[in-house]
Length: 115
Image (cartoon, rainbow, N blue to C red):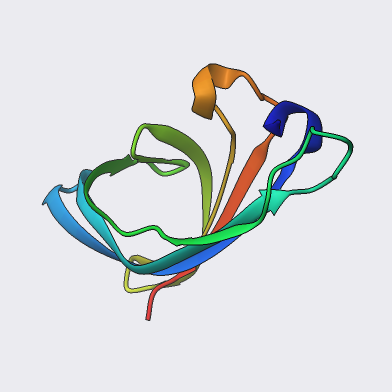
């Protein structure tokens, strides 16, 4: 049970953005893999580790100077290594609101680099 055991997860992938305006559009996630599992094994309050494909397409996104909304999740955002007005390193964090906020103690942090 996630609310009792906690969760670790990590993933990799390539995100391709298709802008439809200066502040948003849709994105696709390809070559994506996620590995996740329970942090603590206490009785039945845990779940097994797994590895699975995490490819997605047509995910809506939008952004402001300090936030990035991706697939309905709002992240706080900071940028680094800005070249010609393009942020080449992005750092995102948000409090997990998945599962109708039944586990609000989860935090999700993401780092992305433009190649």
